[in-house]
Amino acid sequence: MKVFIRKNYDEMSRYAAEIIVDLIKTKPNCVIGLATGGTPIGTYRELADFHRKGLDMSKVKTFNLDEYLGIGIDMKKSYESDQSYARFMYEELFKHVNIKKENIHIPNGLSKNPDKFCQWYEDEIKKAGGIDLQILGIGGNGHWAFNEPGASLYSRTRVEPLTKQTLDDNYDAFYKKAGIKRDKMPHFAITMGIGTILEARNLLMIANGKKKAKVVARALEGSVTSQVTASAIQLHSGESMVVLDKEASTELKNIEHYKHVEKILSIRSKNNQKISSDSSTV
Ligand code: PGA
Image (cartoon, rainbow, N blue to C red; front, side, top):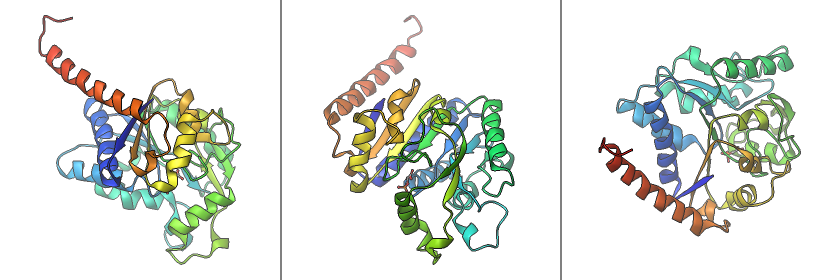
């Protein structure tokens, strides 16, 4: 696991976007797992900026982590549907870049048979060749996607009830602003499982703000537990990257080590660039 600490939200967002752009440049038909919430908005804004400056995303495939059950892509006129993650993704990313509609996958909150849908979603991820890079936030209760405390670390895509804390957090962040009553908010969601997420070849977790400092430290440096499902990052066998702003990093114990690793990695990558331009070196 590599932890990168940036000065503020904007720099965190830029750095996260650069990691995504590097992947798209080396593998234009990559599969990216997308997250919603307040945290990735800046990253998506930066991606849109890269696109305006020439980044082609026409071959990229995407799979979103989750969606509320009962709202979604077809309910354009309903009040509640304004808060669907499908709409969020359209507003924050898809309308600004050239990802093709047929390459976008978001759990269908309006499915008539959600359990069957969840199996279909898992199959689609496999058919696409698996996820190359999964973007993740972290909830106030340590959740990844809507894998609430107690969710199995082997879980797959399924319907999950939301905790009171998640409802409170998301109500304040999104629903309240839109003037929607609390009892109109969906209490269930379709979510990729922790087992599904851990199969992504690379993870990119982002977090910002003082409010997240304790839970970030708990996930990265505490014991692995289903009570903090993001702690499953410690079980990931591929490359896991965590990009934080300074405020979200303040409770980390190993901060000096993370900074040291970043420094030696950048020295190594500079040396590698020199080496790769010298064809006689093995
Ligand atoms: P946030 O949510 O980005 O709105 O803080 C993160 C999450 O719940 O995963």
